[in-house]
Length: 446
Image (cartoon, rainbow, N blue to C red; front, side):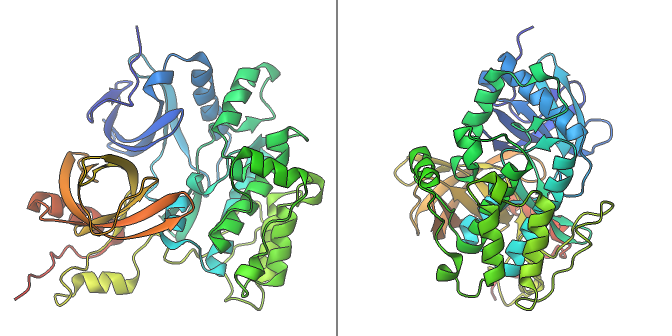
């Protein structure tokens, strides 16, 4: 039977007779991710399938099912959990992953450009805690970057979740599993700004230090709003060959402690032998660098194998108490409770051109959109989006109120115009469920 793929399927498709597809969450060069629910238990999952064009591609199929085996070996609070995997006769191979309610770090950085020093270190410490477990299982992620780091709400506060092991290598796999074709596919899927010198130039073996380098790039970007090297493959490789150092963080941000910049420089060393040998060592150096400079971070022992490093990632995804209070205040009509909501969005501009992007958060008053296409301020547009609870696709009028540009992407704040009441009700209920805020419609002006 010819498989169809899910990349163009409407909501309510059923995968492998047990997963009901609700809406698309994300789309990449090889796979799509959908919010789905088990038709018996009603448990939500993130369903990962190949894009339509690759459903019959044998290398892509091997890669996806291999990701299932990699994730099956990992159990860590900061690593996405795999719950099921299989092959659907109609839709091809799939993974059923833990459904994480959170925001990708790259979207947060587009909107905020950079993080407070304590927040940035908190993110990277948790990321390194995840990587330490990954590496102890003889796995190298190879694609650590902000887009693959989700910030979610956990029992002990906001926390990091490392996702997308699609191009990871596993040292305990049979030698014939990692074929040259699969390796080539992995290289093409890598993001050049976050790839280590040995990963790009094949100058040394790929091991834990490769991910340490990428984690260093993530920390550098969280602190500066920029990556150490940019401009495409040729420019990045030239920088490596000429042993050019990244621009100094302290020259851009004087409050960065000297020890933190030194730790980051070591993580970003071109020669892997000069880097930290493990993610744990990098995390410990970052924590030590903060002593006496910023308030202490809440941390369980990063050296303790029985626990994940837990740090406070303040106000990255959850609304602040002030925001919740404003939403309930009848004197502030246009303030609404926001909730994380990541889904592809299509924007029809006033000149009828189309821009595609993704949402970061939503309220009944509007939505935060991240896109790589220029969208002007004070422009009336139409948004095509699935609603967060039902998955029903609606078309809403909106006005762009503000935008921020960071590197190649733009964050756009959009205000809904005369959204139907049933749409507002569903979004309000979703935001209340996600944040714990009381479901009170905003009072009308008297």
